Structure formats: structure tokens, C-alpha cells
Image 1 (spheres, rainbow, N blue to C red):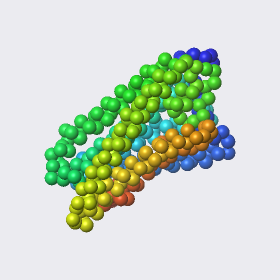
Image 2: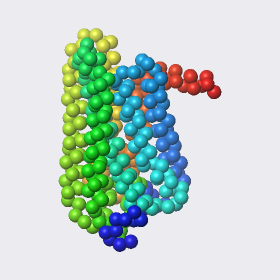
Image 3: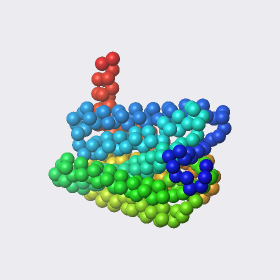
Image 4: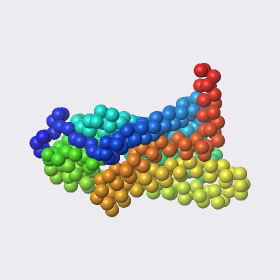
Amino acid sequence: MEAGNQTGVMEFILLGLSEDPELQPILFGLFLSMYVVTVLGNLLIILAVGSDSHLHTPMYFFLSNLSFIDICFSTSIIPRMLANIHTKNKAISYMDCLTQVYFTMFFPILDTLLLTVMAYDRFVAICHPLHYMVIMNPRLCGLMVFVTWFIGVMTSLLHISLMTRLTFCKDLDIPHFFCELTQILKLACSDTFLHSVLIYFMTGVLGVFPLLGILFSYSQIASSIRKMSSSGGKQKAFSTCGSHLSVVSLFYGTGVGVYFTSAVTRSSQKISVASVMYTVVTPMLNPFIYSLRNKDMKGALGKLLSKAASCL
């Protein structure tokens, strides 16, 4: 394959987590199990919110959107990985790789922005409880979700439009289990300076600023909780925020872990293993965090499962 070839027949090679043949069945079973748990767990959250009228509130509306995004994020990575292991074919076409790059940027951006919106929702609920339903009206909630999707679409398209102008060298082996943007850029023969600048800029705008927004919201929430005289009110406020804080910590913690791992080591295998936490484990754990720490969600899930059992 010649350098600079950008036609639809170009193929990259996904080296995966390990090239050891004996580990492939184990990896297949492990990732298949995690994918099934991720899809079922998040799907149950969506169904529970939709079936229980008590959960038709802004908080659970955003939660169901987060669950949908987590399903899509996992689906953009794991099925392709499982197919490669099963068929023992690690090749992925140029267009398929480009598509995977798009979605593996798009859904984390949505996650970041939606978690920020959810923090704002908790801020309004606790700091301005009397005006909560007026401020967080259906129109505003729908608009905020639309804006997060719009930003995600436009940002991802910008990266992809720049990537289509790249030329690639003969070495097209990607030391990863999916087409990850920075790994693709390392294979390019053409100048990637503009891409690097865009990555750092977007990381700041769509990573750091949302985190600052979340931290500001929770600083105001903490201040309001300290002023509460009722211990019951404090406990209720903590319980509604605990799940979201856990998910935020897991999301940003694993993301920062991947960043520092890539910064301190040149081992592509270590970077890939760290990426598993960010791309696979986090979407799988989110439903458990929200269901185990939330009485309303546990009640809705119980009703949903009882209805499903009675229909069998």
C-alpha cells in the first residue's frame, strides 16, 4: 500500500489489546460480557424512566439521555473489536476507521456536556427549589440536550474534515483496539500541527470548561446544604447529588488516567489497557451507580422487572 493513498480500499490494522492467540478467547468472552451488561443496564434505565410517571422529571430525562449515549458509545467500539477477534481479521477500511473516529469523539463530547447540564440541574433543584420547575421547564431541557448534540456533531465533523486531507505512510498498524484519533495522526505522513492545536483547544473548551462549570455548581450546592437546618433535607440533597458526583468522578478520573498514561509511557499496550476503563468500564458502571444509590430508580426498576416477569 503506498503512502498517501486515501481511497476507500485503504485498510488500517487494529493490533488490539494483545497479539497472543491464547488470550483471544478470554478477551472475546470478557468484552462480550461487558457489552451485554452495558446495553442491558442502560436500556433498563431508559425503560424505567419511560414507564414510571414519577420519573418524568428533568433529572431523569437527562439520565435517560446519558444512558442512550453510553449504549451508543460502547456500540461504536466493542462490536467491531469482537468481530475482529472472532474472524481473526484485524483489518479495518479507511472509511470504517474514519467513521469510528467520528463516533468515539462525538459520544464522549456528549457525555461531558450532558454531565455539565446535569450538574446545573442539581444546582437549580437545591439552590432554587421553589423555582425549579419554572426554570427547568421542558423547553429548556430539550434545548440544552439539542445544544449538546449540535456541539458534538459540529466538533466531530471539524476533526473528520481535517483528517480527510491527511496522507498516510506504508506503516498502517494501529496499536489500539479501536481507531483512536491521536493514534491515527501518528501514522500520517503529512503535517498534523493543525490537528494537534485543534485537539488541545477542544480539550480545553469541551473538557476543562465543563469541569469548571460542574465544580462551580457543586460549590454552590455545598454552600446551600451547609445552610440547611434540617438533617433530612441535607441527606436528601446528598443522595440526589451522590450518584451524579460518582459518575463525574469516574468519567473524568478515567479520562485523566488515559491522558497521563499516554504522557508517561510509550507502551501502546498500557495505553490501550487504560483506555478500556474510559471506553468500556465507565459506560457499564453508570447504570449500577444510579440504580444502587437512588431509591426512586430502584423502585421503578423493580416495577419494570415485575411487569416483565408477569408477562412471561
